[in-house]
Image (cartoon, rainbow over all chains, first blue to last red; front, top):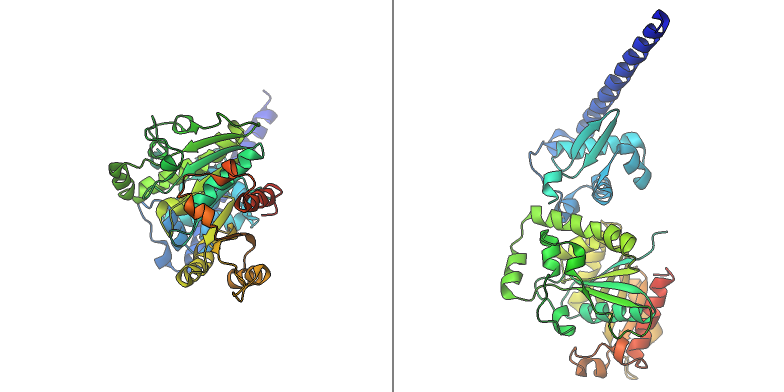
Length: 124
Length: 261
């Protein structure tokens, strides 16, 4: 491998890291915006909050739509949820993260993608 | 457009004819050559085991929701004697008192898992096993099992009567339950008394229902003495092919099949 190729590879790796960090930062900002929009009292983190139908019924409409879509898909990215709900990806990302804070969904990162799902150990 | 292949039959009050409708709708689809699975989600007052005269089952539908058996073990094939390509499978709620008590005491986590299992039926039964329709017979009102069925369904058929408390409750449920879950909902008005002295004829009843509920009307079933006299022992759609009740069910099934419902 030439010196130039090594340098190029390093640059790509650095850019990838920057991109990942920016995405994480973006997610945190979306959560902060959501927290501000709905007031902190709405989004107290709950360690265990089963996503049953009565909980779904008591949710605000915008979150219910997102939560039901994840229930239906089983496991989904913000992109996949947005395709179903026909809302913007950034909006769904914010709602999904809010549902994670509320303890209703779990989030797992795989590479660059973040997957949201209803807690596995509860699915029996 | 989403096809109405998973149907939940629900009502606000008991005694509106949910089970009669579920069983006969299933039998009608089968008569039309469809592969149908009828599931009893009325765990507090199971009745399909009595209607189909099955006292003991190796596995009940309760077992599937409990996660102790797979769905194919919980279904009973009742296709013997059907003269066309139609197939009928049933998943029965366990009528034993102990089972009813057990199902009444389930917690939120269990109900959440049960919802996951109901949602999984779309893949396991419709996609993998080639069923055309799944029909959930539910318990009345806001029961966990019924709401789970509603959330899992493509179409909710609401059986209602002209009883004032039923009308009020049904209207509330339309606004506060089905609408919140964005469910396609259709009304079946049951036990309607048409009589010459009545101020309402068929057209007036149709207009009134559309006005009161603001959702489409799937059908009107008059109060048939023959149906009451049969005391739940006859599946009209299967055994009384020329009966007007059977004809009404035929129309409903066609509407659903043509995706007009």
